[in-house]
Length: 237
Image (cartoon, rainbow, N blue to C red; front, side):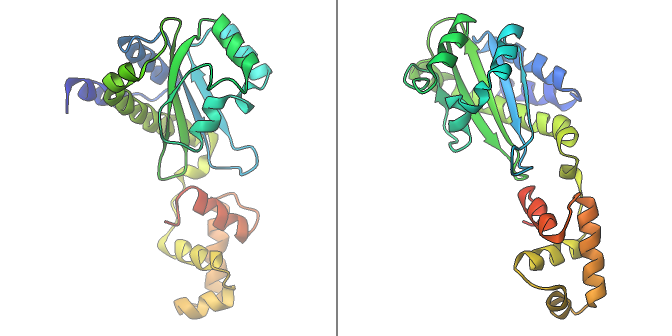
């Protein structure tokens, strides 16, 4: 482990506030020759309009305009981050589908940058962006800094998940018992409570008891929702 990696680990271990994470990320971004940084967190639930959170040191006016104009819905970097683990380097071609966003971002000094996504076992996705007002990011620069940037992305993601996710989606901290996991898995396979009782050699009443407990823990309105929610946050794997 090189000094950069060791410093990052030490820096993020004791952080317990998202503002501190952003402050540390900003400091490390500047060491990589970027003026700005942003981190977006996307929860796996709800399925319709998943909960999200954004933290950045972008100019405050730009942050407000980005939100007010719904730019997140048309931002090409967000779209690509959701389906690709590859680095996303800003360019005119990348932002061609959203020229108004690109022009306005550049007017606020966000003229060059790159983004990289991250996803963990619980299904929580994140995207870290580095930006500046200077020269464009070249392939050569990316290759030279890739190791440090990738390590930084992972460190920020797992720190933000630890600090922010429980506030956005308390279910991510849920612990299901072994039996609760079993009955939810079989429920997900389409088995009835009676069939699950026969498979596990327990009573149907016991099956329904465990399903009910899991529903309460997951804030689910029915057993189908409980299975879905548990699967989406990695509790059934």
